[in-house]
Image (cartoon, rainbow, N blue to C red; front, side):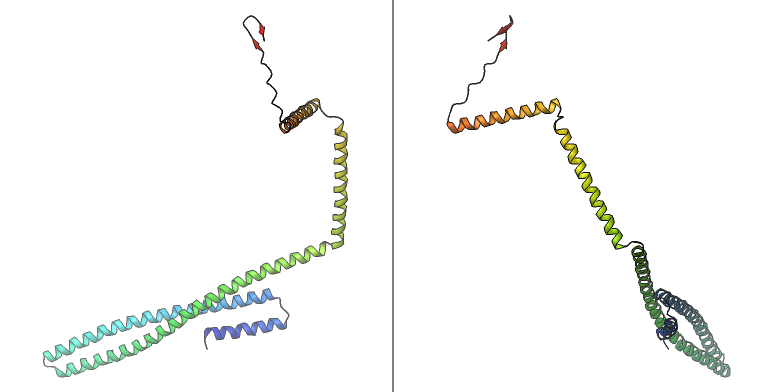
Length: 237
């Protein structure tokens, strides 16, 4: 049974039990995340054991290969010394070492294949766990927002809000009336400076109006007024 199939069976069993008890969705989400984290720890532990087994087999193979070389050298020495009986024994030991090497290599290959599948399971499970945590955070935010809306609406009645807004409109209208009354009071109490500004403005308007009439009638422009200058002896024309 694969790690995901077993995890699915565990989660479904626990969720069904919680649904029968009418548990809240957030609690179910936390349970799913906890089950996935526990499974992730288990898969990582199994992967660590596989790595340890792999290193152990690699050490055994290295030692057995050295043993095979030693028996090969001993067989050659025995032949050189004319001891074929010893040479046969050395070659027999060499073959045993080779069989043990083959067996360990097959086991090592199986461990490597399992390690690859476990690594793939780890990556998939980690991705699923990250996705579950993201969804859980979103679920918490939605729940808190819903609770706040419920609390707010339970404390504020719509009719009270409408009444308060109506009263606010009455107050605003009263302030408008007070401001208009204040403007009326200030009409007859203009400052002296304001009155002179109005006179200057009226004079400017009259001059511009006269100039427009002159241009339309074709009358010549009025001669500029003479400039009076002061002489050294006094005032002159």
